[in-house]
Length: 456
Image (tube, rainbow, N blue to C red; front, side, top):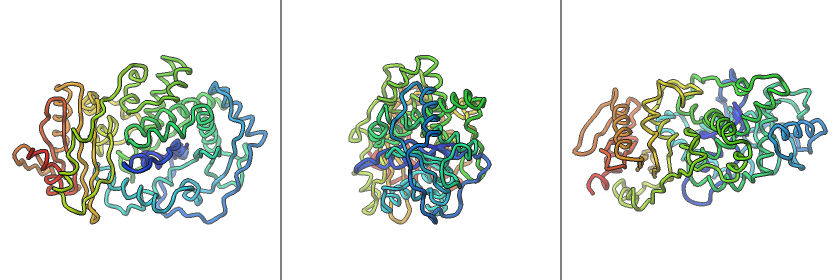
């Protein structure tokens, strides 16, 4: 799919990603993230995106589009799918097209849970939730849907190659790579398997999008003489938090880096095997050497980590679980980086080394997102590291960041750090390889969330 770079994520990033992050119930079928818009100067949408025109009907590929698909398939080294359709969609109709097949209730449930998560993690302020949806739709440049349709966001009525701008053409090529992936590796199957877990869904998206960005670049070099590193133009948005931007672009930047490294080290056939059995954690994207190893994360059973029932009793009757699963190395790093300036290469920058080193020993985690109807919320996480030293390094880095410029109070074994934005971080000392912490909307919420653990 395409982001405004070519995919959307995350919100978180990414509609498909975010839908997959909601714990419980049936998982959503995850699609490749929408391809981001290629226009780095275009600000995110601020007004509601609603359909005002009848979308042009999907049509089988023209001879020109079929020829382009064959070119892309040759670059990708796989047979082209035989039965694709192509469809143009106007910017004002993106919302209806992208959410087709989902109900208003499903969209609002995702929007609410996603908003709560981002606010607790410090990546979204207290704007109305609708802003999140508008922001996401404003980034979409195109996407691929599992009914075998290529979508390109354009003001034109139809997809005619000689009428497409360069960024529209690149978006079309990107979506063609997704169609080739789906034909050979059944993205609906692999995406559905990842959609139960926030970390796994982002790792899946990173491999799928990384492959598409990499081979889009190879095609652009051969067909347009365009350097591959200029294919995806990323601009920092002044009114979008750094954390949200890191999640938006993770599949296209870290994912593309991981895929490039993997192909160079192990070849494209090995990448094909990886698409059949995708990685399950973002650790394997941030540390691509793990993709070719026998390393696996530790699965932490919920009943041996966080006492959910006791926490809900401690919080009160109306509190409910909104999400659960694994945060993973990316979400932990993104949380610690907070409002540090966004950079597309943040995961390789020396100024972020302390945070990257602090999360590098991650081997598994389990978290719950709990919420009250009146807006109070808390996220509690149980994180396991490779050894006690790694756990201590994370805890010390976390404490230094959380208490910096904060109002700090110590209550026995619990440290409460109130941030400038009103969020409160609850810190406990590591226990062996394990670290437990909570972030909530008030000190009382965090205190009650951690009480069953603090009091034993």
